[in-house]
Image 1 (cartoon, rainbow over the protein chains, first blue to last red):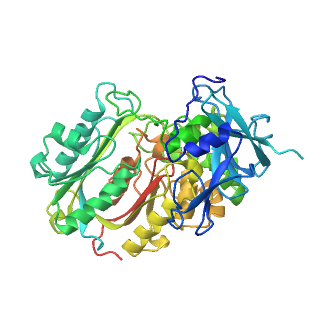
Image 2 (cartoon, each protein chain N blue to C red):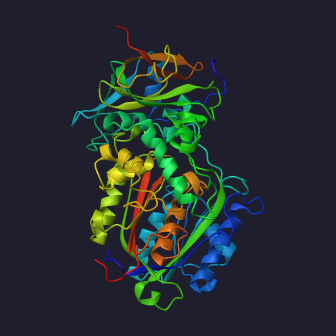
Image 3 (cartoon, chains in turn green, orange):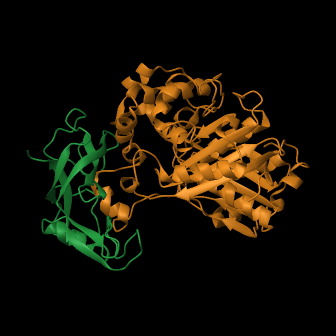
Length: 137
Length: 382
């Protein structure tokens, strides 16, 4: 347990596969079999066309920094300010909230549109969070 | 919905605003309601419709002794009261209610009897946002700002000028919490809260409440106050997760609710004499000016920095001082509505001369929801 007080996700039947994926080191998204729409967060139907025929697939884990704040106060339990709360746009289209690791938490270092790649941060033996780091090369 | 068929005939805030350590949230509701009842020259027994948010309708109705035949507990954040006005107008037109009371109150600062707010760990927010360190509105609401700034070339100084201009309005308002003049440099040197926003770009945290009373326009002429007619209304929701907005370059909820209200009222932007855009944080007036179609988003920052929204400017905006300087108990929409009504009655502390049409635009739950009301004080106006 790296940060015991940090807010801990509790999976539901609709999201369990996502959290099983992160635990196994995979970022899983869903694609509609009918209209090919790729979406997040997880649900067993397509929010674009309402088809219940959807597939889970492994995302590339690549994306870019869409926006962020650097939070100073109040800080969430388990976080040491200042820390960036980022929204990452994945190459597959969906966006997700995350944190940026291996990077100074400063406006100078956190450039919008910078390329990012997924990494995985285990909170405990059940939950692993998807986080992002500056892409190599 | 037809325009100008329903009017505000009672409007009041709590007797005190700011820090009210001797009243619970529920009593603040009652204080605002009793003030509005007195303003309208009514008795509590005249109220047959009731709406509120966060606090439940049953709680407030029981406390006040109201026996309603129409209730609305729509609770979508700070703009809930704009939605209540819209729903109440429809209910009155449909004959479901004759006289609707809408209340808001929050012990935001003193935290007495305040409805707890929490994020369940198995909710979507709890799973996909809370673990990454969001903690209250200052860490969430500004998340789109840097993208918005980059897309439209908005500067930190322009965003700071929002707070400066609103302080100018607040200085004219005896009930405003913060009245001392500030400069762009003051804003940019104030304590960092969540980059890019500093203390003076974030709303106040205060105690207070407000209440509105609506009835049919035909009955309204018999009331003691100058009627303020509901000319147009709009509402929408997008997502409770700020990370899942369609884009950070605008708000889909704003772009739905705003134009709906303008179309319903049958007005163009040049017809607007007075404007309220819920300013929980300094970027909201920029989103609002763009999404409501007053100007391209690119121009919003310079428009405010140039003084167009300040006292004497061509588009008076947030004339009570706004959530940044007037007050913000947690759900500010009610106070924006109160200021629009005061402007239409001609009794605002910083009155806009000859104002006939006021647009009041609200936001709720970060960018989750939106409601827009167009008011007028001339029943036959275009």
